[in-house]
Length: 239
Image (cartoon, rainbow, N blue to C red; front, top):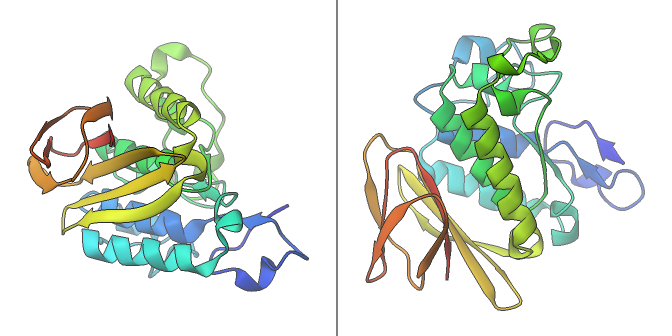
């Protein structure tokens, strides 16, 4: 049973009411960090649950929010939380991000490598936009010529990545790097270590990532424990 609660929900997750909730606090963090320079604040404010919460965040603020959220619940609960970027009660993610696909791709990669149950609201994967209710609930467009195939392919690739690596589903989570523009974390399970690095800056960034030797997703340059990430890109490494 998944409850529709927009904030910290420990009182409902004691084992006698809900199994999980809609994890809107993570949504807020993702929109604010990955889309910080592209937020449509006027449209976002129309969703009552977002008002005063979704704003631009730097990497340190994002990391603190993620650490706080992870501390709220037992890991078994965290693994089944409904992680979403939008819903029938919010503007579409692409609209919240002013149509910026790079922001949405960064958020998707985080969503599919973070603990919990990643959820895509119908049509987001092909670039459907929409303002606050009722525009966010408009019909799906079945004309494939209108679909954003690049975004669809990226969404599928994120799903394939998650399915291929159990560590991304149930592995331990730990932040390994953070600065104003970049954030990286590791997922570890049964000897497998994956490192996810995300660069929100408009320029490439070089960060220290010890022990990574293979790129599984995305593109980067790695040498002597230093990884250079292209602008507005996310990369998954195997350590």
